[in-house]
Length: 357
Image (spheres, rainbow, N blue to C red):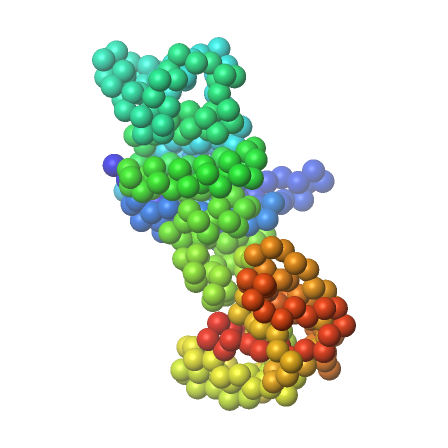
């Protein structure tokens, strides 16, 4: 049965090499609902894997509490927690065939042979490995081995399924396929899932919510759409996809809208805010929400124009500023292509811009 996960004021401090404490995780609070798929996303060293290992029981929190269901699990060993983990390295037993790899945990629990057979066959069917029971791990592809690792975790029927960068060892095309499979399987069984990755595409395609980490702290928690379209900080905007972060000044504001000025042009954005007139701010725009015209918007000069097949990608130096912006034009065959050196105007889709401090 899918379990709720609650993390309160979680902290992890390690002793440094020179004796100075190193804080890996600090002040983290997360509520994960039963059946929810949540991804911990961030750069290397941000604390995401440490949080996952503390949930699993492989690391002990320095402070704070972890609840799985109604149970505080801080002092429980990994085998006593209602969790199972899918590892980056698969961690399959090379001397056991696929059936025995998946059945291993059930045998440790001394379940009846008939029950083990039924559970293993059911899970192998779920992950698409029926008929491969007698094969050795080295007879399978990387994607198939990852399915075995997933089956081994699922067969234990945990309340929470943990993923530690499970697709990082696969090639790009197989990663796309496997994340689709993981998404489909997770939805079909409704298990609570916590997934760690530094791959933004994985996080966006798999998650109900994304938790973006930086330096051991949470920068933002939100749906994929929220963290992309309404980033809470410049770090989030820059980490998720490609973002133009443009300095601006607030020229008017009320509770429902804010007017910002960029290089003499004003843009009115409808959004809840507490900005003050005259306050410096940052405008976040995505490359696909900007267009190039011969005139009418922010003046600039094209410094780079690259054909990417599905899009023409531009870099434009804004006139009167040291700022450059990225502009992406999809289906470039149907539009004018601007070459480097061209004088252009950059138009901004006001509905797509977002204003932060």
